Length: 593
Image (cartoon, rainbow, N blue to C red; front, top):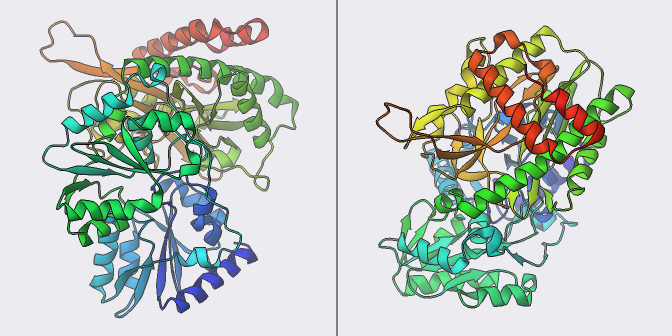
């Protein structure tokens, strides 16, 4: 933490005294609970200097703590002054536990009810009540009061997502969703990717994620209501929306919720995503609040035929760019002088050369040597490191194209690997292949498959502290729910869902390994003699895997066949778009084991 962040902490504490608060809860969130937030909402970074995509701080007048998940346990200690903010693992020592130990009877913990979900607020209130303290919603965020150069809220114009890429019109989607509303009179939609998908809109307020920062109310009968800043609406977007929705300014959400209460409506919200402020307004308006999973998440995750075709086209296009980059890296890195940021810039340039790039799908992670041991390493001018010899280089990156969203990680050796590196890389590869080859009955969840990615690491007493896979949107968020592949997810996998397959291994201070392909759930071919339908994964990502890091002796015959077949496919589909030295390199990179 620099002196400026110490000053920020002092300013916040002074404001807490003015507002008669003992402490304040600071999530890394905006009003829409997304992973990526506009600059004005980076309150956690302003306060602590933590730059990860997920985290929470709690500040009292005398103590301060920061909570991060397993992805960021190393990063948080590098970016945040531990003498001021004590770091905790979000799952092992959650905020509720810290509150129980550090707040006292009569304490008042403030929180911004637009930045905290109804579910979070309930847990926090229970933890405060357990020690005689109270959770206090604030009318004005105290950080905003002292952040004097806080960036303005974004105002970029929206765009429509043409049906040729969306596959289904917004009117058809609204009709289908209404059929599933059951006995409720309306549902409040608060997730930007859900609003974007439902209305076939795309926005540009949030870095790397083309979602619309808007709320919507979908009634069982009548037009939907969408709440969005009017300056973002072009005439084309207005014409697109008028037949299916009434358009309102964001400030009108309060009166609209009160109107639902006046009508004694049964209103559904998803407490895991809905701001506590919206739940509270509905309760005070005397609406009947019904909690349930947001009805958009599953239909959005089940990509339709057009979205599936778009995903395949986007992955092939991206695979060409990534393959060109890997060839460039192998040629240029031995000359010396390349830095992590150089590599990230060159990879972006190859994607831009496709002529189709809309944006990156997240900030590229170009991690060399010990930086690769940080799963979500953030390269900055200060941390920027030269690529060394006989080191691992891990690059996790993705792109947004109008027909699909990509996410790929490749780990390569710059020189000669150690035997340990090859062993660990091969165990990670075996996990990735094992998941790719999986066949499973309908109703199977990601948690039931997760062991396939980890078992070869477990056999050696190893593991990784992040999920194996996350959902991916269709020119939407690179991290999409509801299905995931991890140790605890309970959402059944369904055809059309796109997920990442990315096991890893990280040796702190030395190197890290992750191999990531995107896969799509599909109906598997019936096995002779089988008596029930099965699902499987179609691999979408197309780019070589570094054969120099493979200990072939650790692979089974089935695994070798899978990798050879995968590389043969990469050579055919990507090779059709390369020539000369690049094609010659690809042939070597994809040669059979």
